[in-house]
Image 1 (cartoon, rainbow, N blue to C red):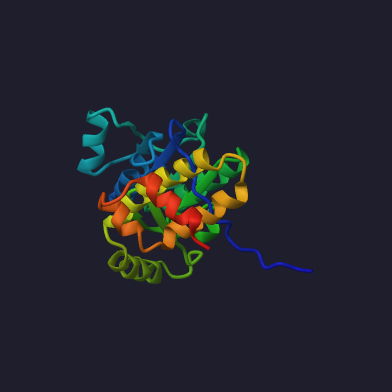
Image 2 (tube, rainbow, N blue to C red):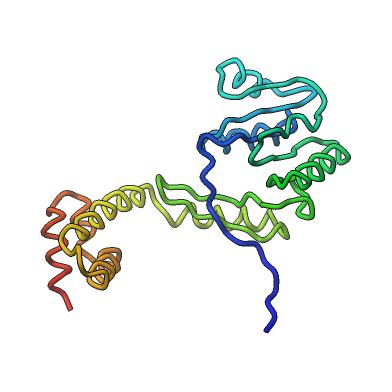
Length: 214
């Protein structure tokens, strides 16, 4: 049996991890902005930079080095993004990162990426990642717009409520994985969920209704 190689979809916890961004232009700014939401310790190295990057450095949100890239910047890094307009520098970053087994992404060059950053639809704790394996970023953006129109802000509230439901179910049925799974699955599609989110019933009553349903 043979399998066609494909990207493995995964969400990475970057909180407190050391991340390097090589480049200081608009693309680097955008990448840094997204990274900041994940809570890593960001180092930026570039020969020149746009104003927003300087402001982030002034606020202490990133470490900024205004000089050419060298391999010493890879020391202790966990992940690297190369976003310069110099193909030679981008390739050098990738090759040196490969030698050190550091995950690297060269923006817009799929062949020089060990991970790819998908288009994201975010609603609170809900994140929908869209990838075309680098074949059509434009189509990924198109799909993102479509999904953005389908999911309202109330999705975030529902997820918070469903988390409370899940915890209540754990307490009510500590010894039955089957029952917990069944109720949690029912909760997602239950017509009573909207009433629960509006505060028109308690979580305990909601769980009891689902546990008695067949």
